[in-house]
Length: 211
Image (tube, rainbow, N blue to C red; front, side, top):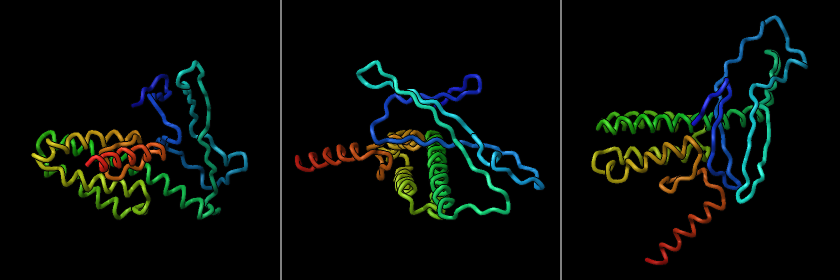
């Protein structure tokens, strides 16, 4: 997914539909400031990462470019961060962290299933399912989608069912949760934009009409 060249991380997205977004989780180590020193106004705002995006517009030679920075505002130990703003920031961060973890857990469960260790795969998924259901963001749409998909994988984590439908579904779920891609095999597809959801609903309606 990522290529590192001279300390710069590069990734490529083949297609990005209008209305879609991509979230990336960065793990950073921030050195501790001396406890005897208070941050000055010029020291509060710190740029942790910079990103450059280049997008080729379909059916044209036009390339759209944008650069942005990830800035954080540090506070002193005796200062308070606005509670509402902090809660929303923590929810967004934790939800996306769990999304990436879910992809890793699903991938590990897939490896166990490939070795015919279906019981080990179920146990791994059940432990993560319990962690998600007790998390502070269990009511968030993204986490509800993760719980629904994991519940399905647990049911299909048995020899006959796995080889018939579970294997294909699991491969797609690993990719969709890691890359935030829409997935028609998902019980709770939370990555589709409104246009994609409408198209899927229209397709389902046509199938029902035919029957």
